[in-house]
Each structure stands twice: as structure tokens, then as C-alpha cells.
Length: 114
Length: 111
Image (cartoon, rainbow over all chains, first blue to last red; front, side, top):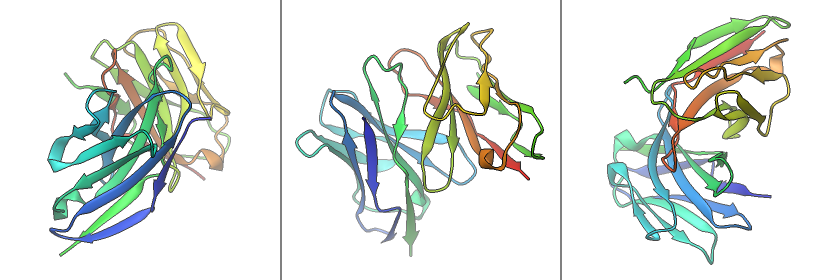
């Protein structure tokens, strides 16, 4: 069965530090991969997506993620954290022929401190 | 162009009551979805629809029903509310291979 695992339910970084949020997936077929961000009391906003083109994907707000098939990973990074990056981040997968249904990880809450 | 609109934004129900969560999209998307979000568990798919008149169960459909009489609307109904259905509900829609557009959610408490 397909699944998504996000390592670390809470991550705390200093402003200006590297942000690394981990995502691993389990799948027997090639996935489409997504990172979404959720600010308090809001819906989900797409940060970036991987759909089998370039393995390094650049998204909004300076975030990027690299698809590594051998590691079944799609970790999200940002070189320098801003206070405004504090939010909850979700990794999700979908599959061709799966009616675009998303399977989500449990989420990682990112805190950024001065 | 309002995107995906969910109403109400907040609601408190008593156990055993029924209600309908409304979802409307103005993007002419064929695919629509209902998810619930519980703390520490991400989002789980309740039901989805690939077009008017076509619906199917997701991962956690028990206690819910849906209908899709038009392309625009995809209401979610709770017939007998239970405390386990306290959650935040999100509706989403998609067209082709584009990412899903999410509404702002409905926060439902059942007491």
C-alpha cells in the first residue's frame, strides 16, 4: 500500500538557518509528489510538485525539493529561514490512474525563532 | 473567480444531529474531493467525485454521504453526528494534471 512518512512532527530553526523537512514515500509505482503549506486557520497552499520531469524542483517562497528514487525521498529545503515560514508543511503523493487522489503525510510543524 | 468556497466556516453540533457541509467551485473542475484533518494525522480522503453523478469512497467514508448533481457543487452530509467526527474538513478540486485547489475549511465540533 502507498504511504507517506514525514520524519519529525516538529522542527525548530533559527531565522537565517537552513530548513530541512523530510519526506519518504512507499509505492510500487512512480509517484507524483507534492509539498503543501498550511498557515493557521487557512487551507493548503501548494509549494511545489514533482511530476517526473527534473528531479530538483523549485517552488514558491524560496523552497525546493529533490526527488531521489533510490531513497524514495522528497525532502523539502530552504537555504535561509524567515519568520514568515513558520507553518505546518505536508508532503503528499498521488499516482497516475488514481484519480488524482492525494495521500498525505502527518505533517511537520516548522517553528522559526529569532 | 472565487476558487473553492466552503460554508460554513465553523459549526458546533450536538451528538445525533445532521448537517451538510457545502462546497462550491467556479473553475469548472471535474474532480472534487473531501478530506478531514485531525491533529497529527495529516489529511484523510473521505469521498471524491470525478464528475457530475459519479462519486466514490475514499479512505474514511463511514458516517458520511455525498452527492454530485452539478459540476460546481459537492456537498458532504453527516447524518448522525458523532464526537469522532469533530475535525476540520477541506474540500478540493482539480482539472487535468494540475494540483488540487483547496478551500479554507470547515471547523466542526460535535459535543
